[in-house]
Structures are given as structure tokens and as C-alpha cells.
Length: 240
Image 1 (cartoon, one colour):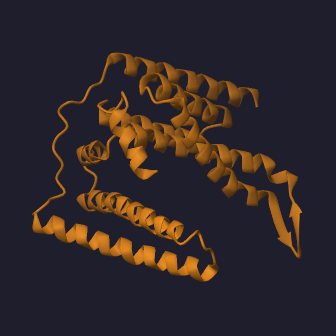
Image 2: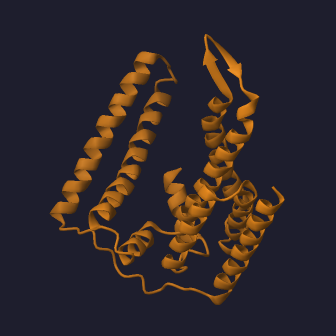
Image 3: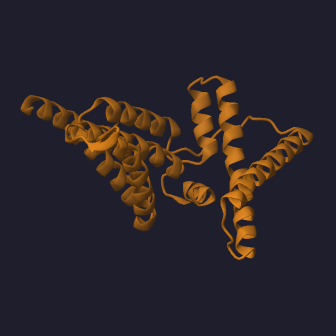
């Protein structure tokens, strides 16, 4: 899954779009998703979907697949807000409006970050953060986490393959042993990666991205969308 997402980050049509423009858009989306109204959050999701399909040229199956995963995770986190525990479990209908708001807020924020992740190679994100003078220690921590994800995914694939070879035998004891083995294997692989990088004198300095593009149509379209969002925000506030 992680390797597949990283592959699309290089293959989409927005991969070389100016990273400062992307980071600025993502930052504005996040602020508006957290502080705006529910109508604006829905419009942000539609905006992101249209750019992924029309500008990034991603297959609709890819977008729908990740959107469904995000929705399921968000709904799974918001469902407990609808219940209260007082010796027995009770459904609280008064919390539905608040749960819907939290759900839309989390959905719009997550989809904004997903847009940045699936349309931007990671080295360009790092380059953009360094251009914004983000502390180097934070950037190095991001790089270490990013590399560890692939090490963990490789170890998980090997573990799942081992379970399949054992005819899919399942038990809590085997599950606990498998998780422990997965963690040990991932840490050994990660330590080997760090040692190899140190032996080769690999630094955390990424090459400057000189092939960035910023067509005027993206700037104009973004401005139009922001005007629509602002108008809907004002209209919603006045009506309510």
C-alpha cells in the first residue's frame, strides 16, 4: 500500500508542480477545514477530487479506494461519540450534529494531506519544507520516519507470507509472536539501513528541484475556488 502510494506520487501529472504552491494550498485547506463550516468542508473535498481526477490524471479507482479507506477510518473514530456508557450503553442522538461536524472536519483535513502525499514525491516535500526554513532536526526526523515505513512494510509482507506458508493457522499466541517478530525484523532492517548510509556517507541534503512548474491556470483556478469558498462561508453564516 505504501509503495503503491509512493509510486503514484511520481507518476501523476502534478508531480512537478511548484511545491511552495502545493504546501500553501494544503496549509490553507487545513486551516479552512478546521475552522470553517460543514458546507465549505464538503466543497473542499469536491475540489480535491476534481484536481486529482482532472489535473493529476489519477485513475478514479485509486481516488475512490483511498477515499473509502479514509471515510471508514474517520467514521470508526466518530461512532463512539454517539454512545455513552452508564452501566449500559446508550445512544445519544443529541451528539449527532457534533459527531457529523467532527467527521467532516477530519475527512477534509485527511483528504487535504492525502492530496499532498499522492501528488508530490517526498523529496520535493522535504525541499519545500527546507525552503520554508523548517528546523533541520524536524526534516531529518521526517526522513527517518519515511524510510522506516518502507522497512516496516517489507517486514510485514515477509511475515504475512510466512503465515500463508503455515496454512494460515491463527491463534492469539501466534499473533503475539508474529507482532514481536515483525518489530524485531523491522528494527534490524532499519539499523542495517542506517549503517549502510553512514558507511556510504549519505547525507540528508536533497538536490534542489529545478524542474518545478507553476502554470498560470492553476493559480487562477485556485483563486476562483477560494472565492467560491469565501462566498459560501459568508452565505452560510448569514443564513444560519
